[in-house]
Image (cartoon, rainbow, N blue to C red; front, side, top):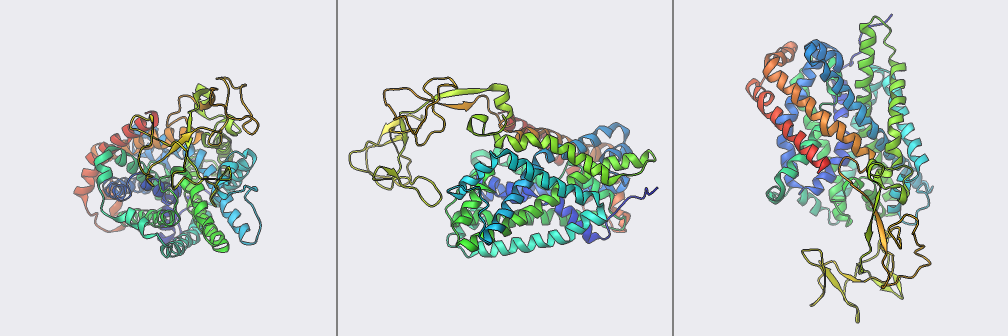
Amino acid sequence: METKRDGFGSNFGFIMAAVGSAVGLGNIWGFPYKMGRNGGFSFLLIYLVLALFVGLAVMVGELAIGRKTGKSPIAAYRAMSKKFAWMGYIAVAVPFLVLCFYFVLGGMVMRYAIGYLLAMVGVDFWMGVPYIKGFFGAFLCNGWSMVIWTAIFIALNAFIVSRGIGGGIEKFCNIGMPCLFVLLIVCIIYVAFQPGAGKGYEFMFKWNLDPLKEDFLGVMKTAAGQMFFSLSLGMGAIITYGSYLSKKEKIQKNAVIIVIMDTLVALMAGCIVLPACHAFGVDTGAGPGLLFKSMQVVFSHMPAFVGNLMGFLFYFLVFIAAISSSMSLLEAITAARVDANVEKGKAPKRGKTAIIFAVIIFVFCIPTALDALGTGTRDGAPIACPAEILNGYGYDEVSAYEPAYKMDNGEYVINKDGDKEAIDEFADGVAYYTKDDNGEFVAVEGEFDANAVYYVDRYDFADLGTVYTAEDASATINKDEVKYDAAATYYTHHINGVKGWNDCWLDFYDLLSEGILMPIGAMVMSFAIGWLWKIDTVVEECEQCGSKFWGKGFFNICYKFIAPLGMIFVLYAQITGFFG
C-alpha cells in the first residue's frame, strides 16, 4: 500500500501553486471594487502596510508549521500541540465555508468567458437580453443555469485535486499562472491606450489621504479583510502547501515572493478595471457587480470584435485565478482526510476523497447559486435569502416624486447601455425638485446644475419594481395597464432586517469564514508562535535550508504584538460590519 506523501517537483512548481492559491477572485474582483469604494490610493497604502507587517509574518508562520510537521492543518496543529488541535479543525472549516460561495462565483466566471468566446464567432450566448447589462440579473435568476455552471466548475476542481500535487495542481499552475500574467499584461496595455484611462491611474496612485481622515477605521477594516482573504491566510491552504515543501527550500524567500506577486496581481487587476471604468464612464464603486455587470458594459463600449476578444481574455484570466485558488482550498480539505487515512494505516484514497468532498460542498453551494445574491423571491430569485427567510417583507410608500429623465415624444431617451438618460437642461413648464440634507424634496430655484440630481412630480411607475395598492402581497398591479393616479397611495416592497451577514447566502458563508474563523485562526497562531512556541520554532524550521533567518526581531514583534492585535481589530471590524 502506497503511503508516501506527495510533494512538489520543484520550487518553481511550489511558488506557482502558492501564488495561485493566493491569487484569486480576491485580487481580480475584490481588490478593484474595494479600492474603488475606499478612496483609491488610501486603500492601497493601508493594504501595503498590512501586507508587510501582518500578511508576511502569518505567511511565514503557516509555511513553517506545514513544513515542520509535514502534515495538513488538523494533523499539523495536533503535532505542534494537542491543546491546539481545534485550530486545525478551524483551518479546514474555513476553506469548506469559502468554497460554498467561491465555487459558485467560479462557475459564473466560466459562463462569462465562454459567452465572450462564442460571441467572437457570432453566437449570442447572452440569453437574448436587449441590453448586455441585463444579462447579470437574468443569469442570477436562472436557477438551473447557475447550478449547472457551478457543478462544472466543481468537477474541474475535483479532477485536478484528485490527480495529486505533482500530477494535478503543480502541472496546472506551472502553465496557468504564467498565462495569467501574460493575459494581465495584454489587457493592461489595451486599456492604457483608451482615452480617459489616465484618470483611473490617478485615482489609484495619486497621493490622497482624505478618505483616511473621513473614515480611517472603515478603510482599514476593508483593506485588512481584503489582504487576509487575498493571501489565502487562515484557510489551511498555505499550511497544506507548506507540508509538501522540501527542506532545502527557503521559506522566507518564498513567502516574500508570494506576497509580492499576489500584491502585484491585485495592482495589475486594478490597472485594468479602474482605468477601464474611467475610460468608458462606468462607476468604479459599483461593488461586487463590478466584475460582472460593470465590466460587461465596458466591453460593450468597445468595437464589437475587440470587445468580445477583450471580454474573453479578461474572464479567462479571472477563471485561471479562480480555479487556482479554489483547488488549493479543496486540497486543504482533501489532504486532511488523506492524512487521517494514512495515520490509521489505510490507503490514502485521494481521488475518492476529493470527489466526495466536492459533492458535499456542491450541496452547500446550492443556496448560494439559487438566491440570486439576495434578490428576493418576489423579484425573481428561485429561493429566499437568509434575511427573507427570517424576516419576510415590508412595504414602502411610493414617493410622489421620481427622477427626471430626458423625454422624446412622450418616450424615455435610452442610451446604448439601456439606461434612461438624465436631463441636461430644464424643460419649460416643468417643476423640478432636489433633496436637501434631510432627504426632503424642495423646489428648485435657479439655473441648471450638471452635478445635481433632479426629480419631477411622479407621473408613472417606470422607475419602480413591483407596485402594490395596499401593504399586501396579493395587491399587486399591472404597471402596463394601470395609469398612475396622484391621488392614490401605492407601495413597493423590501426585505426586512437586511444586514451584512444575511442579505444573501454568499455573505452568510462569508461571515462564518472570513468574518469570524479566519481572523481567530491567524490571531491564535500568531499568539502561539510569539508567546508559547516562541519565534525559535519558526527560525529553526526556516534555517533547515542552510540559510540564516533574517529579521528575527521584526518577526518576533509581528507575532507577539502586531499580528494578534491587528487580528483582534479585524475580527471586531468584521463582526460590526456584518451585523451593523
